[in-house]
Image (cartoon, rainbow, N blue to C red):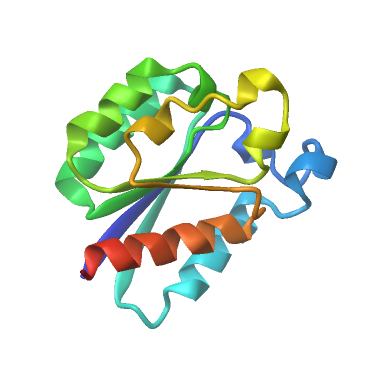
Length: 145
């Protein structure tokens, strides 16, 4: 059975309430349900972790290398600042797909830099909650090829 970790970073626990004009009305719990429904016929196991703490995200990536076949990561603001998360992704040797609800390239200049894109197998941005489903498709293609 294929096992995937969907890892969400800071402030994503507030989805659906926070800056709706940027991130939409879909809550993190609704995104999790969408993902589970999307893979219901795939014989996949999906685990979800959300943390506002960089170290927990790094530890979760380290643990993922032993427990999961791939990771979907929305690192939130850490995308633009965390060389440590970039290094963790590079170290785990399983595919990681980076996801952003908004199009980071059409936002403020400081959000247009993604350290994670340097080591992730793909980046999905600007698709809202459906970006997670696209990330699952990308992982499926990678893991079944």
